[in-house]
Image (tube, rainbow, N blue to C red; front, side):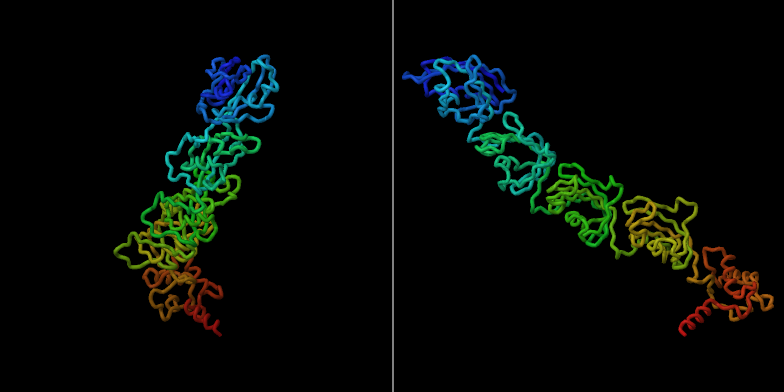
Length: 569
């Protein structure tokens, strides 16, 4: 802002061919306020001479001068015209419209041009004009662009037909604000180069990167022109925009996938129909995070390729490996579209998902078994009903250890096929040799299912490291004892050692234990032998009188055969 006093005494050397306004504004800059002491004048027949009786007192000068006024420039200014006693004879403020004209085109100070001097000003009066220069531009002007800051990385910049979202502060040249997206708490959204923005913005936004800040000065003919806009932007006004580009995309864009970390080896990649668990950080292109599974302390779990997620993520999660990290950039038409989602995701927002694949599976997946060590000598292997002892480590696929048998004094024990452990582990423990080691992958439908158990997350794929420590062969379901050789033909006689036609528990127990010790028979493992033998005795002592007689004694196999015949009848 420049304050100045310009004094012009009446002089025969001043003619109509001299433009007082030209003199005033020549080389004036920025926003200018002038006090002009001007003597009324009339054209004379003599030749024009230099103007030497105008005094300008510049009593305020703005710190920043955008440019100097030159002949041919257009200027817009407000003024008050007074006499030296302070009496007002004319004012653009009263009319509510600033004066507009071109320097160097023989137009005069507004009051003079309109005949004010003849109508309202007496001869020989000294006039004072107080002027504020509001605007200055030239038809040759272009958009003035100043880059305030730019991001370190810029993989893509604005091109024509791109859709952009940006924040802005809009002012006139004198600093008067006319609009701000920040005050609305909402970005300005538009397509570039399609005539939806003023020409100056259409031009100035080209080449901008997300996160870049630019300062634009746009002349009126590239802004809102001679009509202005509403009540805030007057006619012939240059406008100033301070812009921060939030994001951009093109309606033709597909997702962008950047593989950050790919584990090796990768024996299988996801396909449509797989159920996947993953962690994610979700942000906008400017880096501001709007959601994170880590904050929720749980993975996001869903089927892929079946329409359960936004289209871009559904597509971006196909073909991934367990443990892979990738970044997926989603244009809005493959994310939440023009409507956005809730209060956190605005309409037409480009989204960035940084994803870590924890695991995935398919409901058709079997248990995966990898034998890491097998003894050279293996005479027998585990099978259903065998009693085994084994060591194990149980972890998630990302390496998180959940359980280990090493925390206990003795190995884990179980009867194979007894329904006491998860199905996948039970299956993996079969056909193992003592001393054999395996790595086993168990899908959740053969593990702890969708709900999980304790510290095992729902739908988690589990990794087991197994080592078979010991093995006791079992007996078939429903049996307490089996013969490893042919049973004696005269079994009752073998049991009745004193030949009194009665077999008490003592004789029965002694006989069975002898068969086991000689390797002729086998009791059901993992239980107290005396308890098992006691149950066997009760089964044979059918009248519960404490002894087994010849007519009571029946082998289990004979009982099963008799039962089947009865059912067939």
